[in-house]
Image 1 (cartoon, rainbow, N blue to C red):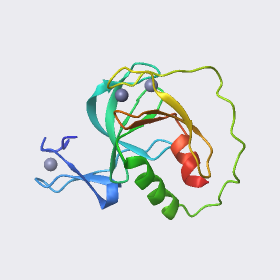
Image 2 (image 1 turned 60 degrees about the vertical axis):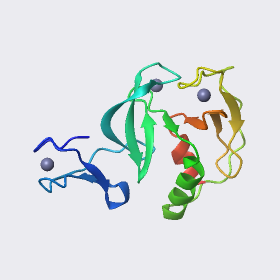
Image 3 (image 1 turned 90 degrees about the horizontal axis):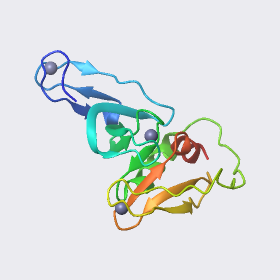
Image 4 (image 1 turned 45 degrees about the vertical axis):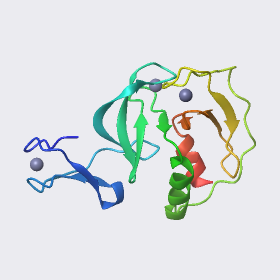
Length: 155
Ligand SMILES: [Zn+2]
Ligand SMILES: [Zn+2]
Ligand SMILES: [Zn+2]
């Protein structure tokens, strides 16, 4: 994202809590979604696999993700999910949710990978949290619906 003050590119700082401009030293604190995504305001080249809106680059702490501004799903890149989950779990201080039984998918949803357009696989996320995540093996992308990251982190 660019600085609203001077237009220079800003960088994430404070472990991803905010953005800072090295040029004029101003700060920007973006709003966070329920899943802790802070939008960087940069459009991504990929489309949301659910609602086809253009994804927007954002950060969950310092991890770069792509989020849908419409349905608030989050696309996580190669290798990021386990790092992200470890970090969010380590920082989560509230009560832990008891493991919930795995709910059946609302409908037979088969998403297309936003990068290679192949059908994504639906996997239960093993470990506490028990959410179903859509993955593309060849692209190593993981799609999480709104609220799923928060559920995994709190479990
Ligand atoms: Zn600036
Ligand atoms: Zn969407
Ligand atoms: Zn793919």
